[in-house]
Length: 260
Length: 260
Image (cartoon, rainbow over all chains, first blue to last red; front, side, top):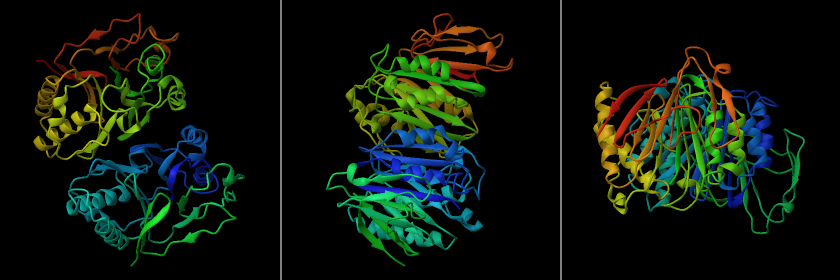
């Protein structure tokens, strides 16, 4: 199993604190030694950093901790391989362009072998994981249904929920997906979230000896939500998502909620 | 104008030496202060590092110099903006997936305003540069002509040359393009290359006080070709490409040559 970390914020925010705890699970406090990746959306642009080596040993991961990249939306993943070799092409997050937007995807879970029958159209996998295949299928289905960006966002979100529900019939499918504005989180078995806003307090990481007083790093209007496989801090109340639940986040707030 | 740097090699090779000289042009010895990027193909996978800040000041660029990523094919670009703002979405190299392969592209030059009329199909630009628009057009035309990866490579390469010749009618169009195996270099005005093989000698950079004795870092069978806007070393004989020339590189060797 892998671990997921996502962020949605209403102001460009760095994820150094959460990422510091998260990456300790990549071969440190956790068993996820098979690569890691993180993707940032910044001012309409997109970039990701991926490494097929454990995050605790990775100089690129250390750079990300030390170099605060400020972003509205972040997706990160640490991997414990079950399908597909440990190599760069199998390292999340995956990305494809649709409607002139870079879409980014990370998956936690494992699908039964029938995933190979999910039919592909516009998008083909580069590596050989169930995760990337499911991503290509999902994006292809969205693009077939909506050749142009839909004006009816609810129709898009509802269809995305349907597609996720279908993928859940193949096995464990916890998802982080983003299009640069919205962050979509779908829970099959395990995802938790927390929204931080004024008055900001102190948080301490479960996986590393690190604490932060958010009041020192924020302004009163900031809203920052963090979504992760397991709560990252031990002194805050995280909300666990329900199986079959899709949340649509924008600017740190929940914009849409779809349930089984 | 921007600057391009490419590498094709028959063994996984790091590009630290050439990149060290090249990045000095990004705001150091050159006027290209508007971002930089570098893409690596490793064992069938792809990753790029992009930064909208000058390469001489960039902690990510320093990481790339210090952390030898070994690759068969590399594409790098430093930017002096002429079309499109300085922002991440406009920072080369650009990438799109076709036939389950990550294609990567960087452009040097400027196209006349008619580039906006180049019709797009499968691929849409994320940013607003002439370069990315031309890339999306080029990839769309290739995909229309070859919905599947062609077995006749010569047909693909000849068609790619035709498309480049068409883009050259819009202005200056020096190109680096890669599909993970082949590196394609097209010269509109300025590109030079050098192939290093046994017996390896010493090389010294034009832009920085750095020299290397390749004999200490290579084996007798290594073949490494470097392609750049301007020669990067001052003690070796670089070959300048002809306007209208497309070279196809694989494993450090020229596999195909197409001319006007």
